[in-house]
Image (cartoon, rainbow, N blue to C red):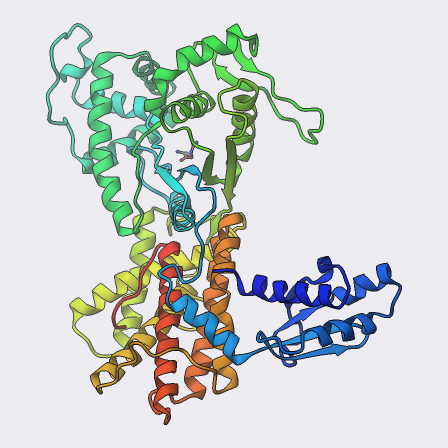
Length: 588
Ligand code: ARG
C-alpha cells in the first residue's frame, strides 16, 4: 500500500496542477497544529515567489481545486498561505481496512531485494559473554529482522572470536594441568579422541585463570603467544584442541542466545577466514598495495581529506603473525566468494570504529569487494550503570551477561507476583518473557550509537516508555478481544467504520503510520524509531481505551468496528515487537 502521506500528496499535486501551479509545491507534512488539522501543506509560500502572487491567493486557488475531494473533510487556506487539511473519516477507515486485509499491514516489500550480511554477536570463544556482546546481539538481531521483513535476503553471522591470544592461553593452562594429553605431543601422528578433555565449566574457569596468570608472569604469557602462533601456523594437536573448544563453546553459546531470542544463520568465526589469508596477502604484495614498514607488512590508507590520523592497515606483524585486521579482511574475501553480498553490516562497539575504517578502506583499495558492495559500520555506545560509568559487577569486574539477565528476571518476577495471584511456575514463565522485553526495549529505544544507562528499576516498570508497558498494552487488547468472544461477540467480516470520538481518530491516525515508520527504520537501520512509534501507538490506544467503553458500544456495527480496530492495533504492535526481537505473553 502507498503511504498515507503519499496518497495525500498525490491529491495535492492534482489540485496544484488544476489551479495552474507546479505540482512540486504540493508537499504535505504532519500538521504542527494537530488541534486544527492532521496534515498541512506550506507550498503556497514557496510558489508565491515563482508566480509573483500573494501566497494566500495561491492557497485559495488550491483549496478551490480540492472541492469534492474524498480525502478531506475540510480544507482551509490560512494566512499567510498555509493549507490546513482535515482528513475525511471514511478515507481514514478505508485506509485501515486496506491494512487489515493485507498480511503485511500495508508495508510493501523492497522493490529490489538485496543480499545483506550482518556481522553481529561477536562473542569470544571461552570468554564469558559480557554486556557489550549483549548490545551487539540485541541490535543486530533487530536489524536482521527489520531488513528481512522489508524483503531482503539477510544472512546473520555470529563471527566468533576464536583466533586470538585467548586460545593460546587456554592451551598453555591446559598443558600445565594435563601435560600428558596427546594434543601436546608433537610427535604424535594418529587420530585425536572425539571427546573433549574438559567440560564447559572447566573451560570457563581455565580462561580467567590463565588470563590472570599471564598478567603476572611474562614467561607464561610468552608461552601462550607462542602457542597461539603455532596454532595459527597449523600445529595439529592445537588445531584438534581448538575444535573441541569450539564445539563446547558453541553449544553453550547457542543456549545463551536462544534465551535472548537471537538466532544466527552462520556460526563462522575468525578461524574460518585463515585459509584465505596467504593468497590475499600475496595478491596485495603483488599488486603493490602492501609494503614493509618497520618489519611489518602494511597497506597505506590515508586520504587527503582526513581530519584525524588514520594509521596504515597492518596485515602481518614482524614475526609473520596475522592480526584482527587481517582476519576481518580475509573474512570479507570469504564472504564475497561464498555469498556475494550487496552489503555487509557490522554491529560492533563504536570504540572499534577506527579498526573498521582501516578494514573498509583497505578492502576497497585492494579490490577485495565489488565496487557496489557497501560496507557499513553500525557502532553502538556503551551500556553504563546508574553511576554513568561502564557497567561493572559489585566487586568491580566486567559484568557478565547472565548476571545481568538474572537481575532483570528477579526484579520482573517480583513485580509480576505483586500484580496478581498466580502459581510460581506461571509467574516465572511470564517474568522470562516480559524480562526479555525489558532488556531489549531498554536497549533498542535508544539510538544505537548513544551510551545509555541500564536501569533495572525503570526498564521493568509497566509504566512509561518500557517494554513491559508495550506488552501490557498488547495483553490488555488480547483480554478485551477474548472477553468479547466469550460473551458471544464476533466481529469477523465487519469493516472498520468512521471514528466516533477524538481518541479513536487519534488511534486510527497512529495506525496509518506503520508502513512509513517501518520504511524509515529499515532505511536508517534504526530500531529506536520503531520503539518510539509503538510507544505513541500504545499511548493512543490506552487513551482510547480509557475514554471509550469498547464492549459497551451500543451500535453493533460501531462496536464491531472497534473490535476490528483493536485487532489491527494488536497486529501492528505484534509486528513491531517481532522485528524488535521479543514477544508478548497471553496474560500478565
Ligand atoms: N569478537 C570481537 C569483540 O569481542 C567482536 C567482533 C566484531 N566483528 C568483527 N568482524 N570484527 O570485540
